[in-house]
Length: 195
Image (cartoon, rainbow, N blue to C red; front, side, top):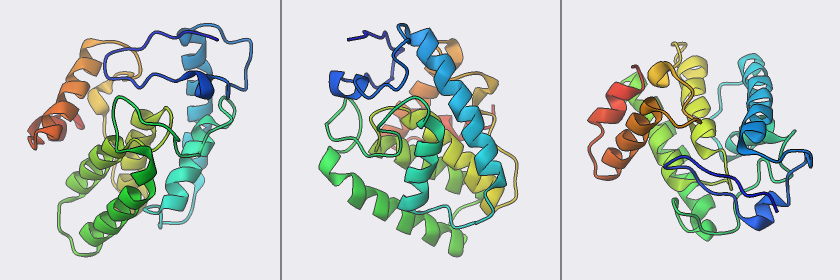
């Protein structure tokens, strides 16, 4: 079994999930990150061409994750089947996602929040639910960006203008913004997404 080291706030992949690696030649986290990023870039291009605007659905949430990781993980697009260091209990994922989609569609249809706030609130709740074995942060950031692009015809968030998958000062600020949001202080996340 491959042992990966994870930056603060990352979700470790357990041994059952590691067995789902489609690329047996990968032996380091850096190699995994590179392959995943190549797949994510392909998914980003796929999502840009996606014509439908009804992206706030469980079906699309799963499809996007599958597109992002299908070349790397067998379980791409499948909900986790174990509890993690973050997230709702695994057996509550579907009901929490259904509530998130319902709430977000309500916010959009009723102009409950401004554009950016809809996207970052969706991002935060999706990270909090943590539906997949791994890739939740990257997935939820792309989902938030797609809300801005597809639904509001606005520009993406900048997310600190750095790669948040790698340990850095920027990643520390992002994790702190999420932890502050856990305490119902969303001011750091609101500022971070456009920094």
